[in-house]
Length: 58
Image 1 (cartoon, rainbow, N blue to C red):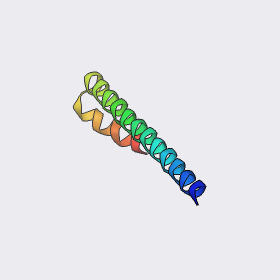
Image 2 (tube, rainbow, N blue to C red; image 1 turned 180 degrees about the vertical axis):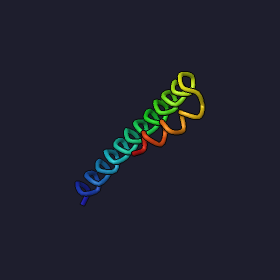
Image 3 (cartoon, rainbow, N blue to C red; image 1 turned 90 degrees about the horizontal axis):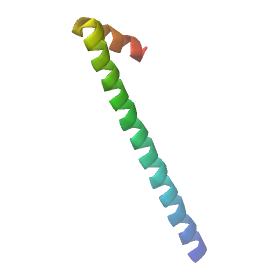
Image 4 (cartoon, one colour; image 1 turned 30 degrees about the vertical axis):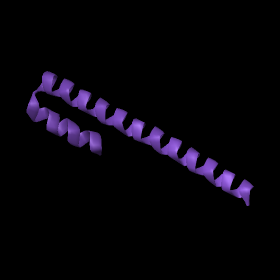
């Protein structure tokens, strides 16, 4: 019984670490997208950045 509890705690810890890793990856991807959008706006203007954003989603 104690060994099972310990294994469950370890499983929970692993799940928490994996969740945090995914969150960090998601935040990094959002930051990169924002940077791309700003670059696109500065190069092509605001009108074309909307098209670029739409194409990136496809």
